[in-house]
Image 1 (cartoon, rainbow, N blue to C red):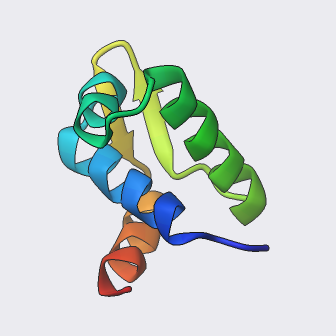
Image 2 (cartoon, one colour):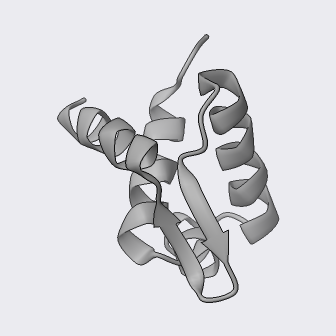
Length: 73
């Protein structure tokens, strides 16, 4: 399993904005690219990091643990 710095950055920004649209704008990438990247990260890790709803995106418990470790990196 390889996790790149870009994956960490994207996850942190998505959690901070609580919106994939706003996170994608902040990262200057398409929302679909960000969404696919986060799904691929979740697949590689074997865990759901974000709960996605019409009201936004928020980290799951596993996601919060991952983000804490990512922020230290």
